[in-house]
Length: 297
Ligand code: ADP
Ligand code: ZN
Image (cartoon, rainbow, N blue to C red; front, side, top):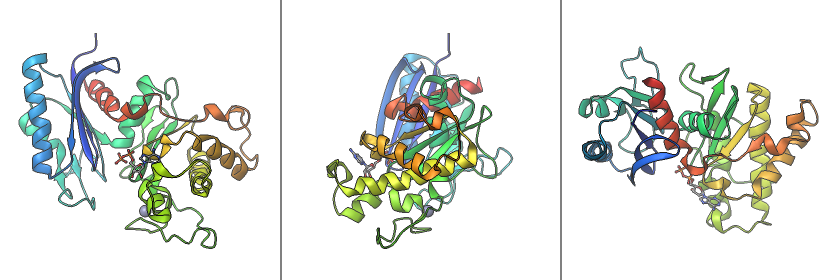
């Protein structure tokens, strides 16, 4: 029997906290908007204190957080959200705030590594050792595993900010990224789509040329990822991927751009199984944080 653990999916818009033992056994869950660190982390602590009184103690808490974050256990700022442009949140000691109030081991990783780990345990990454999970939402982020280990390295991957070709005659939109303007996130995150076309992305009809452009940018993402990491699968989640017709366009753009260079069955006849949606849907982040907590104990 897996032990009872807690999780925090710490997003820039909302926090989701839960307690459970696995994907099929979530016993309590709460969500609240991300306001100030004091208020939001305080709400998380209050949830765990209240629920533990009813459900019993949790053995560990896993946190999958928006970033950038410090994941180096030897660093004095391990467990912090570091240089985020989100007002009030730069240099916030997230792990410290939880540990100070709840006396349990805490696992900490990026939101996308957390989601990738959830997919590995219970979703579209099962049985794989090298794969990538992307979220295409308010921003674009990527995480995942290489050789069975979550990717960390120098800091942690920031794949959403990769540079992609930007044809200004086809797409004069300058880009949304505060650091790079027209990196991938700057061109293809949800807010970029909405600013370029001056409407909610959810309202753009399926035959709108916005989606061909979007598929081109996400095709670059899949090609670059394939060439850099040779993943066994690419999982695309996040609010923008709620447009199911995008998958077919992205798959064919990826094949067109690769132009037959990488010869594997996955990239030819079986590409529907190579570029996929998350097996856990929008629950990958919090379930991944549950899995991160369980990996600690
Ligand atoms: P977050 O990235 O904040 O965790 P989401 O992954 O839900 O949140 O992404 C939110 C973004 O996704 C919004 O900014 C919006 O542009 C876009 N989005 C939400 N719903 C849809 C939809 N049905 N179709 C296309 N884009 C959407
Ligand atoms: Zn950028």
